[in-house]
Amino acid sequence: DAGITQSPRHKVTETGTPVTLRCHQTENHRYMYWYRQDPGHGLRLIHYSYGVKDTDKGEVSDGYSVSRSKTEDFLLTLESATSSQTSVYFCAITPGALSGANVLTFGAGSRLTVL
Amino acid sequence: GDSVTQMEGPVTLSEEAFLTINCTYTATGYPSLFWYVQYPGEGLQLLLKATKADDKGSNKGFEATYRKETTSFHLEKGSVQVSDSAVYFCALSDASRSSASKIIFGSGTRLSIRP
Image (cartoon, rainbow over all chains, first blue to last red):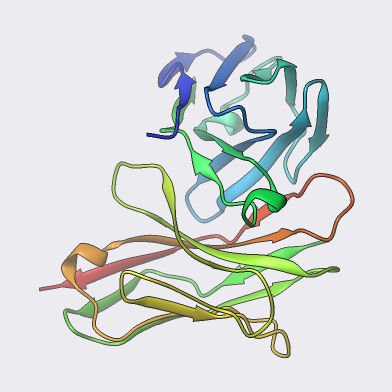
């Protein structure tokens, strides 16, 4: 495996509570991404990071924040979870275009249910 | 902004049938194009890629040709197998951007192969 792990893998929480998902990599890749997968919508980019403390918004960033204080960890936080954020969340990493066309390696996913 | 449009599924074929899954894109620069596959219960993995116009990506009997004139990257396989049943995602990475690459996915096409 490529050395990317997500935690927790499954979480059930209640509306209004904060939630943090963690993505940890051991590949020393520069770029990290958070996506959500929903039926009929495919994968939608939430936020991505191009280095420590360097992040940018994706297509569906409202209600989410991220942090990257060290190369290996990329945290996704839902400040106040809503039922519309029930989804499967995937983290992905890549060394970047100069190292081979930005091929992504994905984590196993984190299934979040907001009641 | 950049976007990827895939044919809607589900697609159901008999074993040994010919497969085409259409993918078109819009991008302001010169993107790299990808097909990823997601087998049941798993994360996404790269199937094939092409980094410039007229390149052909191929893997496991699947092929796709980067057509700049029609902004397309259609996935084809001459004879599908039951084991090809999965969800297929078309994606692009705009490597010409000066900042980190957003990597955008289509909505996915579910493929089911009957024995």
